[in-house]
Length: 384
Image 1 (cartoon, helix red, strand yellow):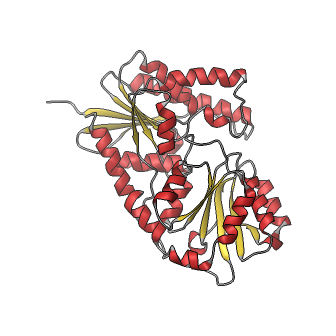
Image 2: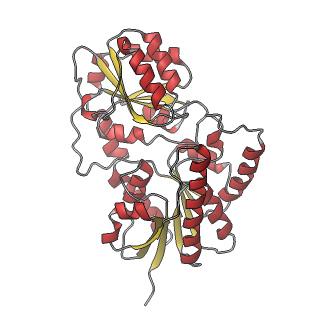
Image 3: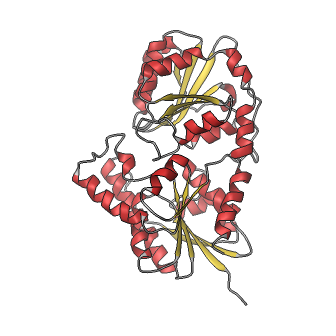
């Protein structure tokens, strides 16, 4: 009797509770379950215990490395390296020559470890790329292109990108960047929204006095927050109100701005933002991130029937999404607060009414879990 093919899924997060990366991995693993496969999961102990996979037909391999509880950049980086080493050890112990390994790009250094192992153990390796390191450290000026550390990391990760047999890219701009690093196959499969068990309301204006725009998520160096603030100041008092909620490096800066500029219709919500009570979702990314990342927030917003206000690079994945689908939002280049202010000022109630339910329809057609799950199954079936 022919033995089942083993699919080994490798990710630090595989649960829906902590971040979008874990949510996506959780859904992807579920959609790949088939009688042709034995699925084994290598992940952190805490994430596996939150994932629901313990009651499923999976072989689970938990890692539980010591971690330092600190927001300090050095300790945070140290934690990632230790986590990657523990996960890598499990990969080495559990992976055999004819296995199919599906991993991601977080923690970043894990990719380099697996690439080295892959040189000696010729299993089939597929990698889902959520962001491209170390190039994604340049736009926020974490590293500099001429720096010794960046050059060393670039050398290591250029080698790492030469090893996988197949790349899964979440953006067409990302596919373009990956193609400069490898001759391997690249398949574009976008992020998605799961409509199951989620009530999505019809899109309509929620207040006759103002149009509400909201950003909820991480406040970090990549989110072009200062550009948004400058645009709000240029706008002054208008029929637009802005709501912010989330965490991250710049959370206190965001709260401080909101406290000092209440007269401009700005408010920080500590308890989160109710998607059903806002009109437009802001999806910002600083300039220079072309092909290096795709904000998952956009797909959740479309699924919740919200038009997008995308701030980013021209012809990036989300810009293409706006251009290819009528009436689901607007795009403006990052780093240009005057252009952003003019765009926001031009948005009218009539324009919003004309977009009624179109974001949800686009999400159902192109970015629903069912549509994307089929693409993942078809890809994995190529290796069975």
